[in-house]
Length: 147
Image (cartoon, rainbow, N blue to C red; front, side, top):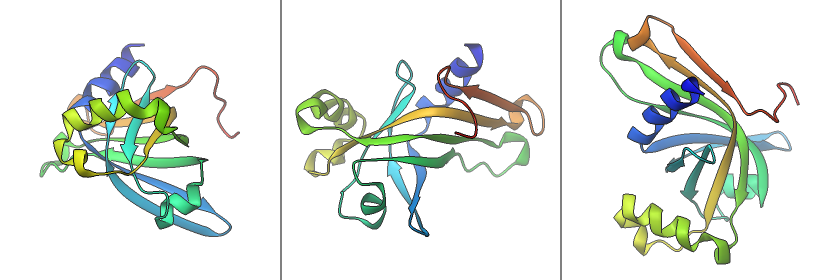
């Protein structure tokens, strides 16, 4: 649990992720501002469904991605790789999440894009502040690698 807490603390200080989706020999990545929920171990983001990545995802898909800072010194590098399931949140269920998202990113108030949840199944953090190449790894209890 301490590993997840350490990763969660860092994720709560960041705000942009990159996620990648694929299907039928097509791959695409997108960047997004995110809201992190440490209790659910999930990211929430806004994105249009008609984008290239939105069409690859449909209503639900497996995704992988990264969150990283941009330090100028190798000793300060920290970043997270993740794997999870992205799901379109029905608008009737999205109001509370949208409100929290707009508090963090006020510019989002003018966006009508739907809310998505990335339920994280795996997190791997590189944290050079703990020693060069130090890794912290978390796997959701009901997840098996390779499935």
